[in-house]
Structures are given as C-alpha cells and as structure tokens.
Amino acid sequence: MLYRFRTANNLGGRKWDPLFPRWSELLLLAPGPDDTVVLVDDFAGTGEQACRAWDETFRELLPYGPRVILLLVAASEQARERIRESTDMIPQAQIELRAEDRLFGDSCRHFDAAEKSRILNYCVVADPSRPKGHGECGFVIVLAHKCPNNTIPILHVRRSLWEGLFRRHD
Image (tube, rainbow, N blue to C red; front, side, top):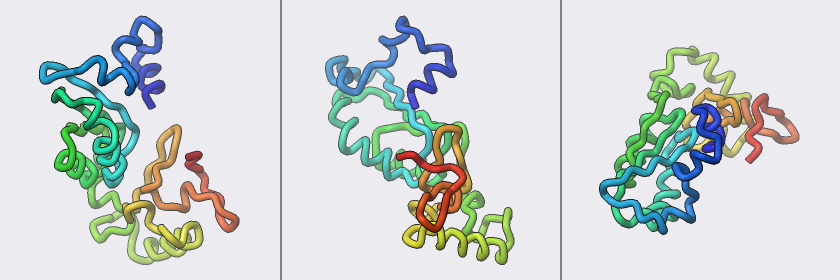
C-alpha cells in the first residue's frame, strides 16, 4: 500500500526514503511525543486487523508516545471507533462506510428485501461459512488492487462452485 501511496503523491524517488522508514527502523528512530508517525493501509472493515497490528507490533515499536495516525482509503464507522478506542492510533479515512452501506442491514435502502434475499442465496453458494463477508459486514466495495474480505463473497471468492469477479490474491 505504501508503494502506491508514494507513487500517487510523487514521493517515489530515493530522496524521499528518509520520510518512509521501515518497521525495523522505528525503534531506532525512537519517535517521541513531539513526533508524528503515519501508518498507511487501504481498508478497515471491522478494525480487527489494525488493532491486532497495534497490539502485536506497533505498540512495542513506538514506546515513547508519538502521535500515531492510521491513514486509510476507506473504513467503516465501526472499525474507526474500535481502532480509536482500542489503540493509540488516530484513524483517518477518506471514505467512511456507515450502517446503510451494509447490504444486508435494515438501514440499507439500495436493495429491497427480495433482492437482499436473492443476493444472500448467491453469497451462501460462494462462501457458506461467511456469506455476509468477514465480520458479517456485507459491504459492496472493491479497491483497484484488492477486494476486502468484508465485501460480500460473490465479488471475491474463488472456489470450485464460484469464481468472484475481483479475487483477493491474499
């Protein structure tokens, strides 16, 4: 994700490398309360992955209390709140998905009940274990480079009975 960020912002040259330290360099740089560290990711649907990364990696790499911003292309309200409450990161997303963006939710007005039922039947064929996507988010979101697992499985799952249009390539 960082490569795409740097390319999109014309920061791909070697002269910009000092602004983009690797994880292994963070502890040596010892950013403190007067510093800001920006982490970049594409999508947060439940916030689970970001919270796990904080607990397992970044909490230890940033022990001196810098301001930590998690820059996201898109995030759900639920994920943003979970990250803010469970970590020291400040999540910032260009696109925020709300309850009405969850295809199978009651507040979603994009599809009527019959359409939701029909879509859910296809999702069960595509992935019986997670027909509404990871965390039962039921999002309909596809990024240029990847389809989040919080998206309905008919869009990304590859199985013997199903070929999603936007495979995940994990």
